[in-house]
Image 1 (cartoon, rainbow, N blue to C red):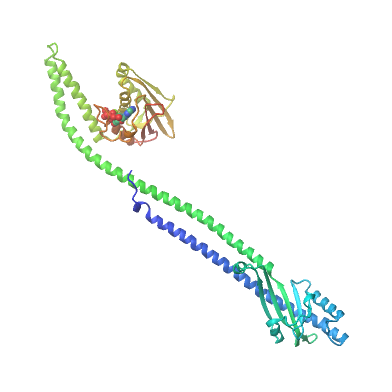
Image 2: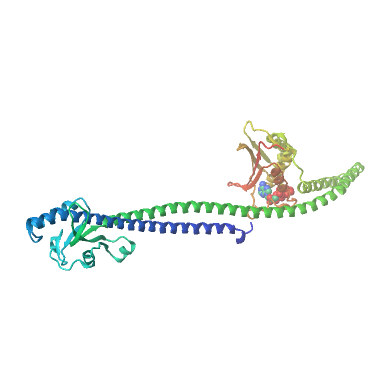
Length: 473
Ligand SMILES: Nc1ncnc2c1ncn2[C@@H]1O[C@H](COP(=O)(O)OP(=O)(O)OP(=O)(O)O)[C@@H](O)[C@H]1O
Ligand SMILES: [Mg+2]
């Protein structure tokens, strides 16, 4: 078969493949970007919620500290002095009972001189100037929240720090009892919320989104790959088929012109051949008296008959007739073949054994054409065993077809000619025309059947013919 030219090998489909892969990559990247944006949005939402939460906490803490500690302590002791153990413990109780069910890691209260007067961490009490800009802003009445993150550069750039804390500084104000009007700043409250767990949850969510996307994309990719592969196979098969048809067409055209030529020559040969045969017949009658006069006319008659058969083969090949389908029994046809050949079979030492199941269905076929085809095959088998031998014919029914296997025990067919034996005029025999198998093939194809010849594993050639049972002409 001709090699496939690259331009014929489904070029448009490669574009589809390219398109498919590109779109897949675009979709994948798009999904990742969406996932990242989604997580960023979730983070900023979480941060602003935490800030709002901190404001509510601070407001509540301010309220409770002022009402439950500052006023009672001022009344009782005349002055707020957190170095006084009783006052400190009172404030500690108020702060802890206010915040006990909230997620607050640390609370520091600064006085007006930026000294830590109260803290969950007793070690930093008394620390001077620890407040920074958050403290200064709070003194001026502004509340500020800052996110403090700790971790390696890699962790921070990927957005999953080891530690993430929201630090809020707010003024601690005097309040008018039973009203929301706030008075002057009395100090500064710093609260620290630990957001590490929330960050981790968001990070886990991010990983989940990305891995789900990757898995879905992976499945999509596999499906697309399968579709593309199947498409490519179909295209390739079509290209092969087109090439095969093209080759068959050119071969058919070649054969048809060859056939036309052979047919017209054969036709021309037949007429003079007829005259030669009838003249030889007359000559035979005339020479009837002489003792050896009959040999020469007999040779002329025999050879002209052979020539006539060859010419008939030529014509059968060049202008095969369309089958006349009728219901017939294949076994009967083969029996007829054997009967016809019986004298030769017996005298030259051949044994034909037909093996067939009891009841084989009839087929619709042209019995005369099949008779000629099977005769050609049997003659080939006989010729393959010049000194006689067994020919086995096996018949069976399978998948709506009748299958006939003809096996001989000759030399078989040499590997280098096995594809050529179907070519018209190809022969390895001295007196062969090389048209026998060509005629058989045309006959079997005209019956929508199939024929193969191969060498049998245990020697000899085996021909397989398959004919449909229900074909109606
Ligand atoms: N049973 C077989 N065993 C071995 N070779 C075979 C067999 N059948 C066919 N061949 C090979 O295939 C060739 C072509 O066969 P085909 O029947 O077409 O022509 P032929 O037998 O040579 O001549 P023709 O049939 O016209 O007298 C043969 O010459 C032979 O080489
Ligand atoms: Mg032959």
